[in-house]
Length: 231
Image (tube, rainbow, N blue to C red; front, side):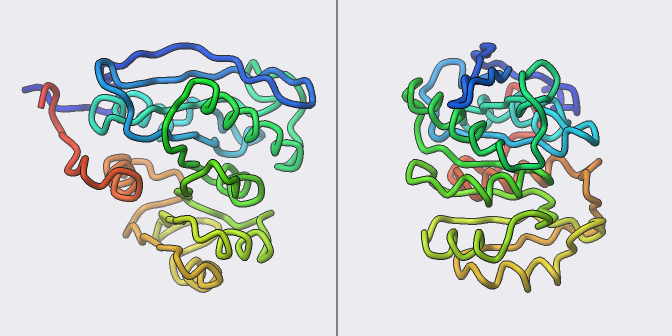
C-alpha cells in the first residue's frame, strides 16, 4: 500500500463555495466532504495571518481537506477571510472578521452539516476565540495560538460556555510557548494544552502530529489515522 505523503490528495466530494457576509462581502472557499458517508463532524478552518501569507491554502489546512474526509469522516470547510486571495473586502485585524465567521457558520447550517468545530491556526485562533463562541459551535482547536488580540474576557466567555477548547502549542513557538500557554489558558477550566516537542510555529514536519491531535479532540473513535492509502 502506498504511504500518504505531504501532497497526497485522498478521495472526497470537493466543491467551491462562496460565503456571503452580513456586511456585503463575498468570500471564496472550498467544502470537502467524505466521498460515500455522511460526515461525523465539520471543521471550520480559520487561516493564519493573511498579511504574512496565510490563507485557506496554508499547508496544515490543505492537509486537513486532503486527508480528513477520507481518514476520519470529517467535513472540512476552508475559506479566505476578507481581503485574502480572491475574497472581497479588506483585512481588519480580526475585528470585522466576525462577519466572516458568522457567514461560515451560516453555510454549515444551510448545508445541514453536523457538529461544527472551529479550527484556528495562528491569527485564526484569535478570530476563533474572539468571535466563535456561538451556540452552534461544539468546540475549538487552536493551533499555535499567539493570543495577540484575544483577551482574558474572550477566554472567560469560553470558560463560561463549557465548550471544549484544545490548544496545540509548539515547544519552540515564536509567540506563545507551552508554559505560558498553560498559564493563559488556566482561565478556561476545560481547556487542554497539547505540547508538541521540537515543533515551531508553522509546524513544518509535524503535520501528522497536528492532524492526530485534531482528530483526538473532534473524533477520537477515528484514531489511529491511517498512514497508507488504501488502508
